[in-house]
Length: 196
Image (cartoon, rainbow, N blue to C red; front, side):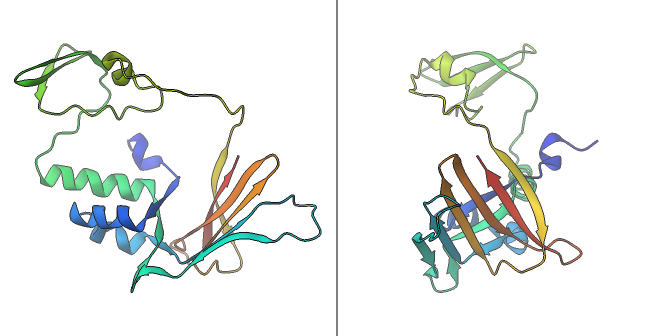
């Protein structure tokens, strides 16, 4: 059966600097053929019923010759490329096990997993989400608040080509964005929609 990450239908905008970092990690060359360059971005800040909806901000062009300012990448492509690179480098990926505790001493960090296994490391990264248990265990404080909003993210097929243009509209009820994706295997134009 497919893993959760293989079924992820979402996409992420990857800024040029992050693309360069992925290149240094040895994964961008695998991701690039499936990535859609964002060559233009239009941002508006008005109500849909306004008779005139002026453009608030635009970006277009490249940060350097041949380097768009961002790309849209399917999360499953990004995740898969990073996993294959980790495997090639001999890095183990442990999934589905919670960290029950950890200790720091002069030799590094000892991590205790929920199944009783113990791991040793020089660095522990708390990248376990917005409600990070590791961050809480480490006593790292955060400031957060609720916006009282939910979002919808989906992929749509459309008739006209997007030409690499992303649009974001800041509406009174929340933002609405269309982000360009590569055409699907049948050549249909596609975009990612984010509606909050």
